[in-house]
Every structure is written in C-alpha cells, then in structure tokens.
Length: 119
Image (cartoon, rainbow, N blue to C red):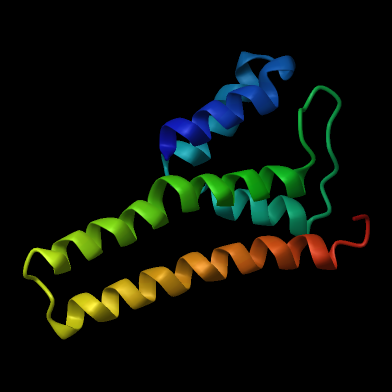
C-alpha cells in the first residue's frame, strides 16, 4: 500500500520538482496521508498547475489504493485463518468489521463525488 501511495504521489507531483515530491511523500511514510488529503478538501484546495489530479481525485485514488492493497487482503487473510481452524466468535466479528469498513470506504468515495458541487 505504501509503495502504491508513494508511486501515486510521485506521478501527482513530478512536474513540481523533487522537493515537492518528498514533501508530499512524508505523510505517506508516517501513515498520515488520508488526513492530509481530507484537510486539503476541507480547505477547498484547488489543483495546482503541474499536478495530474485535483485534490478530490487524489483523495479518491488514495482511498482506492488503501482498499485494494490493505482492506481487501486483510479480509482474505482473516477468512483464511478462520478456514484453518481459528473460527471463534472474535475472528468472525473481526471479519465483519473489516468487511463493513471496506464497504464504508467505497460508500464514502461515492458520497464525496455525489456531494461535490463542482462535479
């Protein structure tokens, strides 16, 4: 997930220089990128010249990367552990919570676009 997010940050900011790429990569490395993206949306930040995507599209791509590279594999690993004999109640609750969280992430992506006045 971190690798894909760093790749996204690179392609988003490569025309703005290495310093900007490194500045934008730091929140990814410390796990703070979702909060930075949400802050940019809340402040009404617009797409800068040289960036590939507007802030809402960047937020969407990062959420999709998190779902693809973290959430969905996490659910699969939990189901494999249950299938191998670890199927107590706590394991099933964990699977349900993980699946609901992944579904919520997808719903938030849709909601963000549905409520964006410019879209």
